[in-house]
Length: 191
Image (cartoon, rainbow, N blue to C red; front, side, top):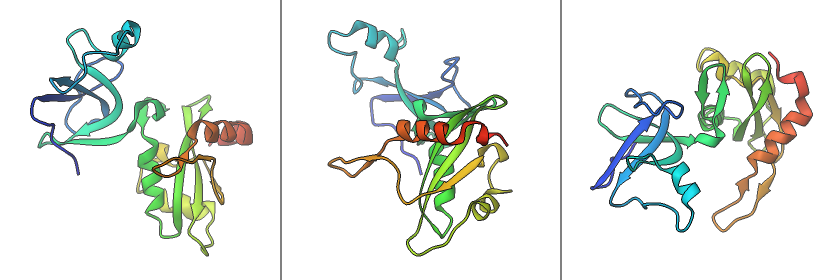
């Protein structure tokens, strides 16, 4: 649960919109600075300007939290974060909660546009082999255990999701899954 920074490396977690440091336990973007951090992108001044602050902090694009001991806990990628009302929610958090259900093999969460919330979470769940599972069972698993805004508005039980094969295992195509959710659901994601 968490890691300390390497010697010579400064680490902080900040609000990605304001750049202000987050409180202990509050999620934000992970920033790095130090001798171990690159100074920029070779012959790419625009990308370097976007990735670094004026005082040398590298904006990692990672969502993280720091505990009381100063350890950093990775939560996901900032570009994958769902913005539900005024909350930033890492899909990984919802996925891990769903996968704690004994009948769930894998779970993948994406956000779909929602007029009221900004985004609503939608889950694609692959049941364990031989298990019979339904949406109501998973919603009941979530109620009272995670914040109501994190409970997927729609849960699709599927055999698989779009993936790209790779040398370290298949990578789930979240962008394609999100497009699929938007096409399938339309306004169905409304609570």
